[in-house]
Length: 73
Ligand SMILES: [Zn+2]
Image (tube, rainbow, N blue to C red; front, side):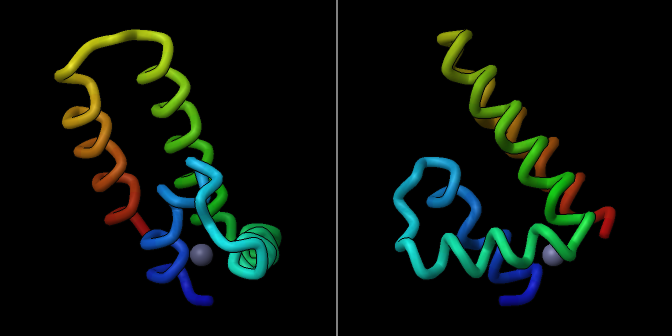
């Protein structure tokens, strides 16, 4: 798996909908790739925030922030 594939699988991973084999690949990648660790940390915080604050505008803003993080690589 490269970073692009990780990004594509992230939302499923966070929602725990990713197939186990892919999960393991993703986690293995995370141990070697600092950039993806930062992205997944940001995404987890975003999801936690989203679940704690029922606000319809938040997901869009969060997604934009996330895209900025991803483009930093
Ligand atoms: Zn990566």
